[in-house]
Length: 306
DNA sequence: CGGCTTTGACCAGCGC
DNA sequence: GCGCTGGTCAAAGCCG
Image: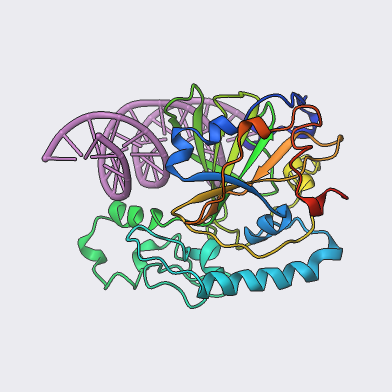
């Protein structure tokens, strides 16, 4: 439960062991299966694409522009021939950026349409009306398999489940191969929202929590985390300005690392798990900074002045 | 009593 | 085709 796991991270003692390595975990077998890779970008734009309400007022307009651009890009520039490709995204999380929609994704944006596909998968009309012959469980799985845009945060935290302004319901937990730590699965409690997230600890550095988000929220957050404290993920994200539009693709996963939070923030490393076929070059572990905090040497040029 | 977590089972995708 | 693994379901139980 969030109240148990999501204790205000700000109150958690975060280690600043900059020598700890997180790359190996992400480059490990599990991550490799997702094509995990690394590169840098503008974190808030990443977050904005997932519907996070984390923008500062001054950047709201700019954010809107980028959001629109992204939606357009995602809707028109992406197409994949893979049978397992769900890049178009579904429901509020993905289709918001895909008004034209992929025929494979019968999930209109609830924020636009009154019908919610997430709660009514059987209502799908893009499967040729064959649903009656398919067990509901199978149908659900068919839809569930559609991948949403993803991105991940790596957080130096002792608590696994970090508050992000939304409410989550845990629906599963699995042991992860080559990792002593289980992976937890959460979905947004909003019935119209299909956003999910996975939370796991790095096997290489147990102090690092890897939170992977999938999809975009189609609703506002419930506000600041219960207890009135701003969660550090959001707080962290607020340090960034909106950035460039980005693309997502389920056949490759790119991770974004951003600049470290201020010293008053826990050491959190946002990693966008971007979906792309063309992955950037992996960041060698040896390039990780050791003396300037987690990311002292790898902050993108444009972000050093912040 | 409603909402949530836990946990075993099930299923699909993927690599060999 | 088979086995492994990740992801999801759903029943049971817990908690406020």
